[in-house]
Image (tube, rainbow, N blue to C red; front, side):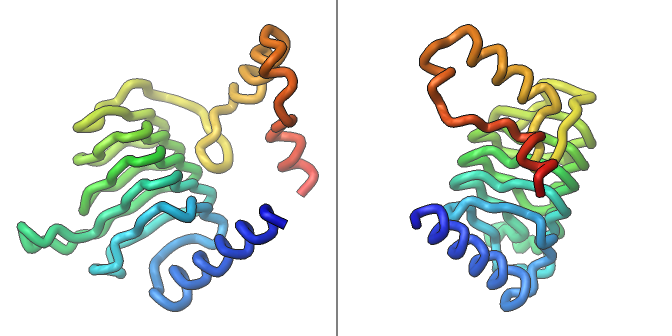
Length: 166
């Protein structure tokens, strides 16, 4: 029941953002309920397919103090980490990972991971799939489960198998 309610709320929120507010957000984008999108300059938010906006992340398209109204774009298959902030006018390339708590002040090239305040590139040429999940994530999880009895008891999250079933 809890999962159904959460999924329903996320669907309603997605509908509201895309159809009522008319934000340029691809239907496959997933966002945490606590993620915040700047609706002051609605035409300035652009989020491409397969991206994920985590809890408390903020995507900005205006700056009141400087009188700026700028387009902010997030590419395909990106992961925007929890409590991160993407400032107005920033473009994040396809396949990027933005670390938790990062403050993104400048454009991020495709296939990069950034972290920090201000965000700096910590890794280049990363390979991700849907929602910015690293291609090596399933293998990392498998090794952890084999080496840690507590991790082995956690519910299975074999991401690729779930995606293949859809």
